[in-house]
Length: 272
Image (cartoon, rainbow, N blue to C red; front, side):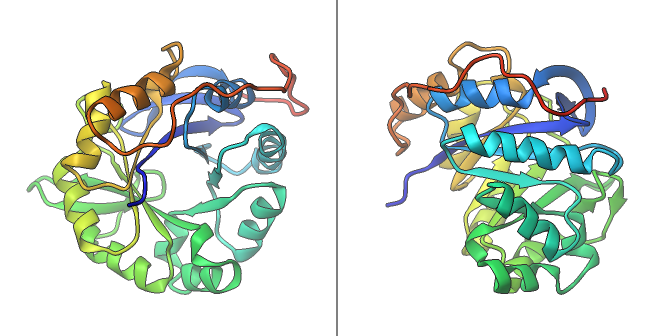
């Protein structure tokens, strides 16, 4: 039986880590390198780094951040944001990412996921799905950073991208994002039970029990959170210890020794 995973997600806007509430960026937390250093030692299983900048001006410096992080990150690193061509996937993998997240362009370019999966392997292609309820309460896939409705049902879309070669699905409820009320378990369960690839639940974690619920009630293979991890000492380790206490099969929760220097300096300039 595969162990369940706890994933820390970092949202980078022009190089600075930010918090998000329903996809609106709120507090600036700090820099990604410091965050990764802590998560490395606090027993997290994976790290997802997403460029959520509203434009592509910071694209090149973001690549430098990925390179810097990959040199000090010793858990799998998944990277996403503004990926529209196989060359972008290749670049991030060459910079040290283990997996790459595709979202909007998976919808706009019918062949993109299939081409990337054939070229690089499904194991490194994650399709991100952002979902919101419409006025009648129906789920709908939204792209372009929560701005463009697609009319797509999330389960139908998940099956399509799975067929095209996606290795995992990163599923975020926009309504729950930043709410601290827990994952949308109905949405998570519906998608997780309807596809054969792992589903990562995202959006809404306010306490450790929400992480357990995402797996035991939502059926997710992995659970991800962002905001909650930023202000709690040993946060990901405590979260995993709680999940193990609740009988969730997890990897060891021991501290890891980080040999890299603390308080590193960026080589790139940032704009908030």
